[in-house]
Length: 353
Ligand code: 5GP
Ligand code: MN
Image 1 (cartoon, protein in one colour):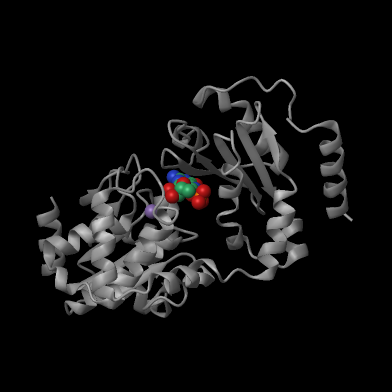
Image 2 (cartoon, rainbow, N blue to C red):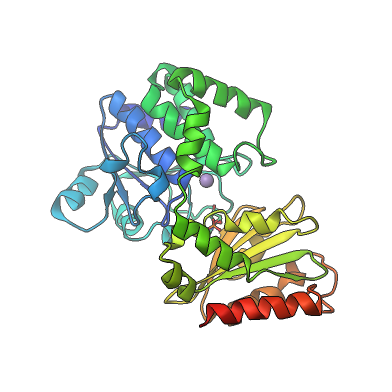
């Protein structure tokens, strides 16, 4: 299968690459790595996304060339003449936005490269594995099957960032010895200064984002004897701090880092409803829970969109928890002492003034 996909890329002249809405490090890193690799092989490539790249990834080589889909003539023409449409880091049309719709309808060969569960059926070929740490790991395998020497610095850097961001900096359970070998290969080939690169991605938080974090953490509630931790992001908090919603990335991991918490959730209020992100540890799997709301993802990191208010979404998600994970009863509703609860209330009230 991989050989057939490598051949298809070798024979293609024009390739469109897209990835999911609200792209993350693996999405943008994989897209840039594939683009830079293919350009190195003399291909004509267009990167087309629904949403802009996060601000902390804008420095990566080629990011400025990513176009947002606007249905303009040059974009439509390129799609019409494309030999391959490469879809990265999601396997469902509704997470691609408008470019996905256009590419699916095109005559290009649709090639999926992805590590999520349950792919839709409209792809012509797939290079996928749920156990892969990242889409970037799968791309490395593709490059390895084609020509390792094509991994120049502008390919190695985005691949490294993609793997780093999708593995929580190389600490999740899908990080294998094999992956460490890949990382070593990337560091060598890209002459990567890993500390600098880590700082580029993680140490550029805005003060607005940190103020938002403080407000979000003040909403922390522990349920079911401290096994479920939830926090909320209201539109009001975003407006008051001036932070952008992308800056909530990673907040949920702080909740998951509490001892005893097995599932962490962050609920983000939007104009149309509530976005919920699930994170879990070990054998507590959350992807089916997210799927029950029309979302999906990985066993330990999933997301969904729940129509309705923030409070509504929290209640909906929590009331179905027992269907997906075995949990102690939520007898008290919250594990906070009366004193802490009163303190939290006062914080919540001060936010509303
Ligand atoms: P996040 O919570 O960071 O938005 O997403 C975590 C993971 O869950 C992502 O890797 C993505 O695969 C998946 N995910 C998030 N939101 C959705 C959604 O609305 N639909 C689907 N199918 N997957 C989602
Ligand atoms: Mn990924």
